[in-house]
Image 1 (cartoon, rainbow over the protein chains, first blue to last red):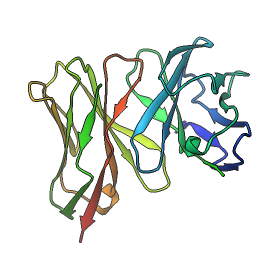
Image 2: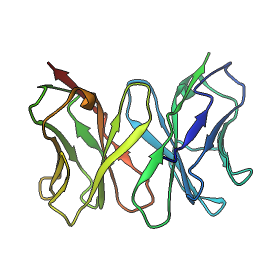
Image 3: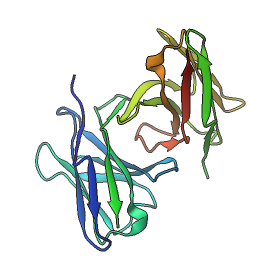
Image 4: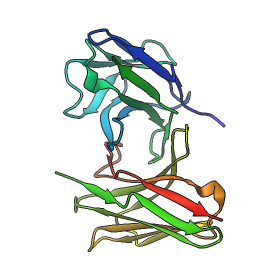
Length: 113
Length: 111
C-alpha cells in the first residue's frame, strides 16, 4: 500500500541552526501539507502546497519557515534559525485531487537544544 | 477562534462498544474527520463525514453528527485490543485540509 514517508524520524539540532525535514508523498498525489504537534498540545496546521506554490498557511508559518518541492518526489520543510519552541513532531501529508482523504507520514520528531 | 474539544481518556472492556465524543465551535465546519494514531505511528484517517449528513457507518465504525449541538461521536463496535490508540477529531471549513484538531482521546482497552 502506498504511504507517505518522512526522514529523519528524529532530529536533534542546536538552537539557531537550520533544519530541513523531508517527506516523500504518495506518488500521484498533488496536494501536500505540513502539520506539527508540540508535546502535550494539539496538532496544528502549518501549510498546504499545490501546483508548486503555497495555497494556505497558518499564522505559525512565518518567515522562519519555507517549503519546497525540489524534484518530482520530495516535499521539504525548512526551518531557519531554530528556536527551542520549534521542538515538536512534524507531520507531512498528501492527498489526491478531489478526495477528502489525506495520508500522513509517521512524523519527524524535532528536538532543538 | 475555532476549537475542537475531546475527553483525554476513555476506558472500555474488550468486546464492548466504545463511544468517543467531540464538540466543535465553528458552525461553518463542513468536513469532520476521525483519525487514529497508534504508538509510534502516523495519523491514519478512519472516516470523515460531511456536515449535511447525520450518520455514516463503515463496518465497526459509526459516526454520528449533531450539527445543532456541534457534537460528533465515533462508535467502535466490539472493541478489540488492536483498537488501542489515540483518536483525534478534526474539522475544516473546506477541502483544503486546513484542519482544526482536538487534543485526542486515548482509548484504553481492559481485558
